[in-house]
Image (cartoon, rainbow, N blue to C red; front, side, top):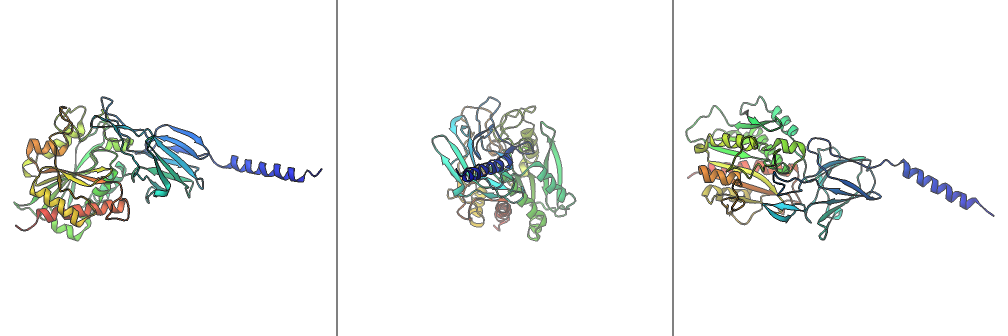
Length: 406
């Protein structure tokens, strides 16, 4: 009896098994600045269920699961399947909401510098289970996965350090977060050009820690104002007051939209509890010190599906909306979106920054939502260069509106 075929088969199986055993195990990590990942359960070969950690408020309400950022090791050349689970939550006390949906396209990177969105072929949606399924094959051993390209407190500190001696920018700490981080206010203007009719503009970003696109846009704003020859002329006529990161604690811990005490940094501007909302207290105090001098206030936010501008129905807002539509990738056909008195009827302590500043001080304050899904004016979804360009476009639009000839 010829035993050679059986022997060769046995040797072949042994080799396959040895290769399988030699293949490194895939591991998941989120123990770094901005990292966030819930429970990971292995389903099968190169297939895992990954819970999105999410975050709830002080009353264990309004859970949102719109941030994940983790690293995978040992994944090279393996066809990876990840099911993102536990996406359901609540928005403004309305259950059943979920930010991650069929049109969501996570980003991946091998170096945390260059990011790309997963393609439509690499993502599918389970409507019944409310789950997003990712299928991709990493080209390198280490890969980073996130909801948006992250922008972290360390990124902001590096940016400000690069401009620390710039003659057109000063920075000051207006307070500290619960974890002791400084909250910065930047003043960008030409200090030698002091005129009675100089305009005052306030810009704010990252009140909600998951909304990293607003930080990339703010970086575009800062770089344009300080590097562009065109912007230097604007700074003779406009002073920009900038709060670049409203919730640095939340960003650092990989949070979603609440501070350490469970308060939404953009939902409690009419009922500030100083001990539990030091971020809002510091921001509001800084803004209201100059309330009578402010010509325009804009807070930047990210949302899933739509670009829009919300605030008081004033000519300055109408003109800003039109300039953004005409000159940038901003996509909106509705004009100024009506602004309700508060975000949740019957509940005190639920005013947004623009609602409170308009109601209490008549400051022309606007909330600008910038979507993370497909932008028709662009080849696809916004990446850091697109966000930075949007920031530059916002500055140009503001200048066009405020400096137009009567």
